[in-house]
Amino acid sequence: MSAQLTDEEALNRVASYCSAAEHCRAEVNEKLQRWGIAYETIARILERLETEKYIDDERYCRAFVNDKFRFAKWGKMKIAQGLYMKKIPSDVAWRHLNEIDEEEYLSILRDLLASKRKSIHAKDDYELNGKLMRFAVSRGFELKDIRRCIEIPEEEEQFS
Image (tube, rainbow, N blue to C red; front, top):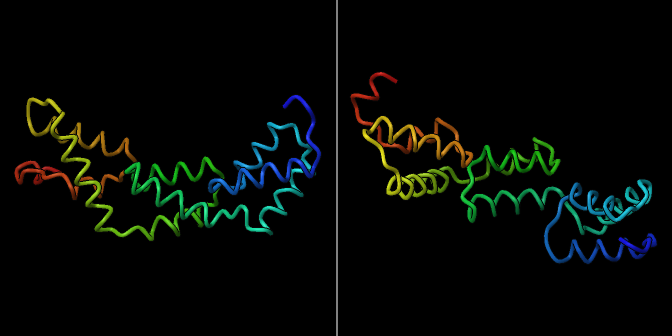
């Protein structure tokens, strides 16, 4: 920023920023640092924003999990990584991740795999399943869930 912001101006601007969309403490902290605000002032501003419920990491985590699962169709591992990058405590993250309905979770994974299966070129089922598994892992799904959703022929299942 070209002109130095006063503490009150910074508070008002960041409160407006938090009113427009859900943000976590780490995002707001980073934004204030980019604005060149002193660390002591940032601590006071963050404290006030939390007191006035402009930022709430629990609420942010719930919204993040819901959005990434339902709209981006991410798996739990990728969502957990995203929350880790936002400095959300792992106990908070996993509490909300474990609230995801398992049937809905597996249904989304099955739909993703069915749609991906149409675009994959493979010489046999083994190669096809390998490509589907790599795709699902890259979307953040765990192998135990992927195996439940991929139809593996009985002769291959005997060797797993």
